[in-house]
Length: 248
Image (cartoon, rainbow, N blue to C red):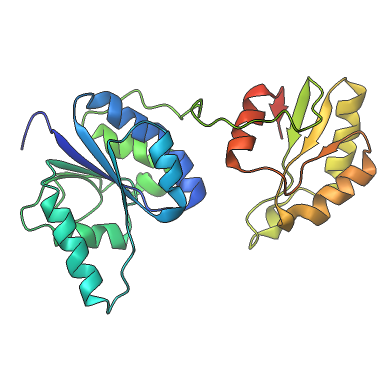
């Protein structure tokens, strides 16, 4: 095994929440290998983030070939092997990325859960908590420490168009669309919004169309709330969060 890997591959395919949680570990990988040429293999939805964060020299898009897409698999195998990577950090850690390990003819050092990996995490505690915690544990096997969540200071968007009044507090009443039971009731968010107004804070509602019914109830209960439902992208949210007094 090489002591100073110079060509590194990071694998992180999705999903959105998991990708965001992996950004801190990605930053730690870059800090640990400041002079290395680091490539990320990701999917199309995260190409922009991968380019803008500044942690990678190259961004490769995984077309995720289907089971019987022989040409797709052969192309991916060739691309991976032609990369001549010294080490791979698998931040995806599922069956698909584990299969990618098998595509390498000359196995690079591999940090992840794949069978045969040089830095393999077999601890059952890896998947107990948040994905971030699992990455911290796994990267520790490769000597990467002091991993912190990414503050996303590189993620910036113009928010001058919004009628913000500082100090403001973000209210996020949504959750995964398939887990509605996880939502705190909208009427309670409305009562909370009125309490914030009484204490001098502007409640700012953010969410997608899937949360429109919830934010409408909150905005009706608290007319002073600023309803930005459907008007924000992830960069808006990161920028708003940095300037907010808090988020609920």
